[in-house]
View 1 (tube, rainbow, N blue to C red):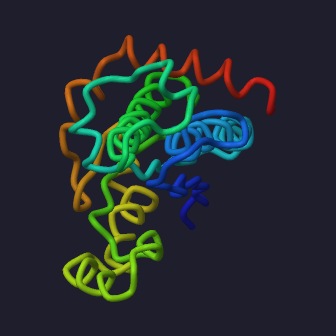
View 2: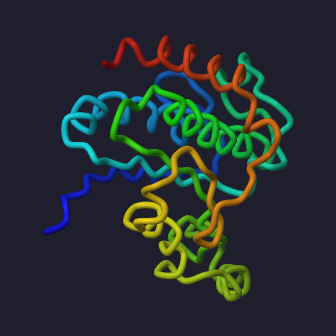
Length: 199
């Protein structure tokens, strides 16, 4: 009988503008800090129930990120589209995964980041009706968009790996910035400080 597998999938995501109630840029606060806090709170349980996996849904948008402005993530969205801020939050997902795999998660807990594809999900609900069907018609279905997450969560092959970035159910090299160990460590340290009041 196979050993039970415990999985945490961090899939909440937002592409928007504004600030969280705590004053963080809304994409960063939702897409990174929320996942960081939830994962941190659950890590003791995940370690105790190993083998366990942490799956962080990121995006190919992280490839276009040019760095993290630590002051900008502490104030409302500055750009008109919020795309730059979204890219930062998705880079943070990949860096977070790197840190987990580098020892922060603990023995028996493996971690993955992934691009799910461009999915015709409810995320596009604010696009006006005449435009929305045209925008989403060539996107993946929600079911197909879940395949890479499911692969990372359940595949025996993925279970033998740790800290990788996946696209279309296969490992793929993330951006050079996403492989920066010093940046990953700084993100972890700052994130710990920012969420300390909510533990």
